[in-house]
Image (cartoon, rainbow over all chains, first blue to last red; front, side, top):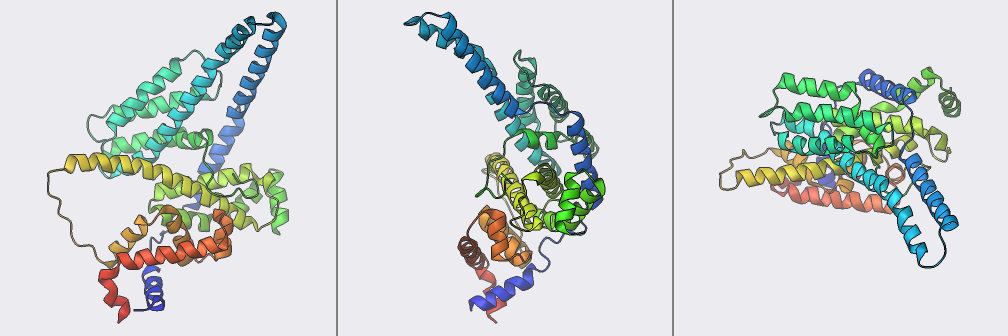
Length: 204
Length: 180
């Protein structure tokens, strides 16, 4: 058996490998334009602006501390005070980012798994509890976050409310909720994506 | 309309130009996403995300490569990252399933050649699989793969070679099919 023969055999076998029957051009285009227009009308500060805000708060906090507190041992207390004012939003931001990433992974796999008959109720309940804690947190700040968390809460509540596996009509409702609110799109846009290889022309 | 003009019109916010750009490239992006995932929903998600990013970042396209290559670079990133997330999720599910099935017997029909090939491709490491699908299934050149996945041409060739070797090993029980 030679490499050439195997390569030829492989080529023959691969002719029909996962051939999509039809590219759903119009459906995808509708979703893309809807998502983009939704973003245009709801454009608000992103995590980048959060970062700038936090950095600015730190600089101002440290500056005020330096001007108002005497030198020496008291400087330590001023530094600690500045840290304290920024600690909560930073912790909140990190916790939220991690949570959104978990929700994204969960919802990405949910549809296929539900169709394969695997129950996702327990996972949805865990994530729902965290979502509610984040919704109740006093330090949110980012106005895009509240509606996203509310939509996530709704979808997770739907999934968590089924005792067993959702029936196909129930599954349709969940999917409809996700699509109507562009939940996955908004999650993809919010959650940072790790680069794969070398960045090329500003892609990553 | 040439590519530069099309890009300029998209940047000016011309919806017809946006659609034209999308129509020119969507088939290859979707086909790649579908062949990598085997799932229509995921393929749609990845394709949509690719174009959303492309439109968002079109002002960063410098024109060093063809626009199609640049879009496929985004697609490569989106698909690979997406598959990693799905893989993490699936892994957790598999562990749960294995826990439930432990102790029971599991009968499975002997897969035929096509199933076995599909499974063997799915079992390849994600990057090998991406290179293999792009080259052997979708007909990309190593130069295009290198640009799209951010790897040297030599690495793309080496990964294709390894992917084929693994497939040959996985399909060894069917050796008669190609040895004859």
